[in-house]
Structures are given as structure tokens and as C-alpha cells.
Image (cartoon, rainbow, N blue to C red; front, side):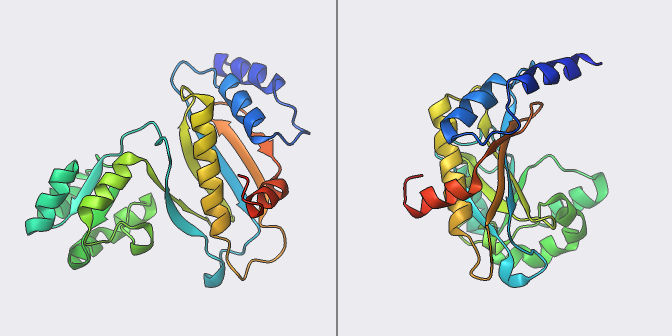
Length: 239
């Protein structure tokens, strides 16, 4: 068994796989099970009671986590003139037009994590849609990444704005922060993310919405929480 395997097995012993943990218990446990030599990311996985094949059951949105994610996103902005200046002033890492499209096409350059564009630049961005799309990098108005307010968009992303969207398996995977974060900060981030996902429940979704809620560190085991209870608590406005 590999060294990583042994560490994982040891971490696994700390988790009761039959139990649903309360939020504070889950946070303490996920920090204990993050035993890698690097600062692991704490991630949330939510299985939703929706059918993503239907347009009226899509779940997608953004939330600015109160304490950020622990990583600084590298932002590429497609804009020109004053809007390009605005993006640079807000802290965008790369700003340009066609020359950046060509760099991506010719050099397979992807030294960025998020792409923002003004609406008038979407024709240019569309030329690389086939390479940006599969990587989840295509700007989208629903995610706030196609906007004239590029300065605000850049600031929010740098502050810890996270996009969540349901995939074909009805799952949402999002980062909540780093294992080194204090427990109360991870708890705040988790509650903010859960509230956003719950508030995004489509009217067409029937039955149990939060079918499973799990948090885990990058290399650690999953820790389950009670989705039904989290829904009820949210309805009572206590999470």
C-alpha cells in the first residue's frame, strides 16, 4: 500500500461512514482528515434531486464566499478601450483582444483560471469557444462573466466569488477554502454556499432536493451531512 494510501486509511478510521454529521462536527473532522503535506482544499459535493436534462431544472449561480477560497484566481479579460483600462485597474492578470485569442489558438496557452468578457467581445471569444467550453472557461452572463462592469467582476472573483452549477449527474462540486482556514471561516463559507444552492432550487424540482451533502479534503475521505435537516434549517433561516 502506498504512503498516501496508509494516510488515507488512517484518516478513514476517524470517520463514521454510517453517521450524518452536524456542520460544526463535519468541519472539525474534515480538518483532522487533511493529512497531506500540502494545504489541502476543502470541497463540497452535493447531489441534487433535479433532472439536469430539463432546462427548468438547471441549478447555477455564483456566491462570494465570506472568507474566499484560499487561492487567487488568474483572470483573463477580453475588453477594449476604457473597459480594458478598468479591468487592469481592478487587478485583472491579462487584458486584451484578438491577440489573446491567437495566443490561445497558436500556443495552447491557458495560464488563467477565469475568463471575463464585455458583451461586444463575445464574437471574438466565440472563436475559441470549442477550447474554452470543455475546460469550463467560457464566459457566461449567468455567471457574471459576460458584463460591461468588468472592474466589479474582477474584484468579486479576486475576493472569492465561486460559480456553482449542476452537472449531468445532478452533482455540484465547489471549493470551500483550505484546510489551514480556521473552523469558523470554513463554517461561514459552507453555510453561504449551501444557502445559495438551496435558494437556487428550481420550482420544477420535485421530492428531496439535497439528496446527499458531503465535504472532503483533496486527499481525505468524504464526511456526510443530513441534507434534509440542512434544508429544514435553511427554511427556518437558521443556517
